[in-house]
Length: 618
Ligand code: GDP
Image (cartoon, rainbow, N blue to C red; front, top):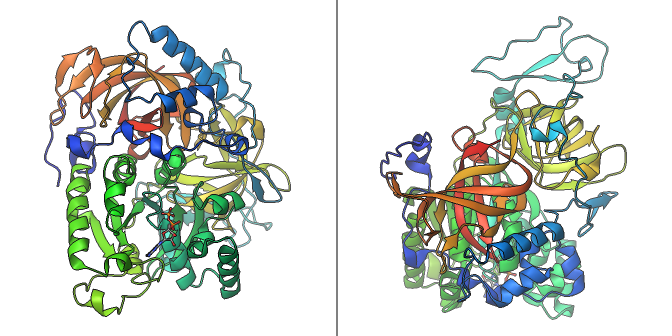
């Protein structure tokens, strides 16, 4: 349990009670160093630049390249007063060059990445932009009657205990079927709970191989395809990557032998249906990883047990710590640490212990409870200890804990705030055949049923949900925690970007261009000053913004104001800051919506702070 903290003057103290990293002190030597960047940053060819236009600060534009050459930790003066004009100019360039995450257009269901849709042409004077609900928003349509429902039409009032939705279906009887969402959720998937899982870890730790092999052992990849992958990978001189190919689907990923996007697939354990997100480990793909992690309930952190390799991933320069801090900052509290490639160290218990101890110490500092972290020795390549407990004598001699699948099964199911107003953050937008278009994303709160009218923020426009699919199965309804595809009509696809939020039109999410937040500064070498242009990562959105004001430095434990209007912020500090975006972004206060009140700040390819929204300025 985290210690009790009295966060004076802040209303969200109870939320910080036992679930947050922000009030805690993260030991300096365990913090992320922005100096870790350079070695993992590629020089991309033009193809890749186009394909990854969505992550501008780190690639593709001149500004980013300047920064790679002279990163944040170099001795250049950080944006002092003199530099602020330059900062604004840079920020403007960043903004002009990058329209945040670009909608991916899909034809016949096949995604073509890197298709740039111009930024939405929205009139800034339009009153609708200021958070007002569109007058075009019409009440939810009366749904087609259900053939299943009985003929007496009645709508039960929403009670606190049960959340009721009406299911549309074909038929002629004028009645709405009432569904108790919580009860239906328990019945669904044969009573199995849904869990969104992200796989994180340093590049080459063996994430894709591990999960590819797991899927193969679970029968998710047929033998013929696996054989084909083996043959092809051999031919390409990358035989050891055959299992990774199960997840790394595009030719480009195979050519480079790294995972670039967040692939998604599902599998089942005894009590759960898992949506798996294999996150990219390379430094320049971290924004994609954030998108995956923002939608995850739990995480698997893969580390390479080989001598020198674990150290390379863990010490400065590696992604192990940064990934762990990121997922924790994004709300993940349960973690399975997979100590992989144990074959490389002859299954030595001493090595396993050494790694578990080092990581355990750090993870505690990062805000994970000991009881929520499990350590599992594996070899992804040979499939040991993945779906069944390994019988290898060298391991059996000292380990009798769960295999990876058992560990995944024992994760506690996440909270599903189905009674809160509907919220879904768009993770992808694509055009299918037929009318309308589709968006995917995790429902963060509430529920939706086909025929519902929802509001999209921005651009503050109403739309109709024509269809819902969960794991490719069409459904009448879906609720918080589900990772769904919604078929949408009534709004132009060009206005919908990754990062938009679909919400309840009666209780929409607010949008703003200025907000205050309490932040925890990661291990940065050069202090943060007013005017610094940074990248705001909020759910699936990444948007350029500026640190407009440093309001105060706060005490890490009590939240007391230690200093007003500080000149700069340094590593490990807790502070209240004001941020300014150039376009409206949808946000929630942390105290109202824990899941939607968190964000990350990145600068020049490194995560520099995690924060919670405390005040939204109009
Ligand atoms: P990722 O970047 O974390 O997804 O790593 P990959 O899955 O692409 O694996 C990187 C390399 O490590 C590949 O050559 C794999 O074959 C190899 N590898 C993965 N797991 C193991 C393992 O358990 N033992 C050994 N010896 N090699 C492994």
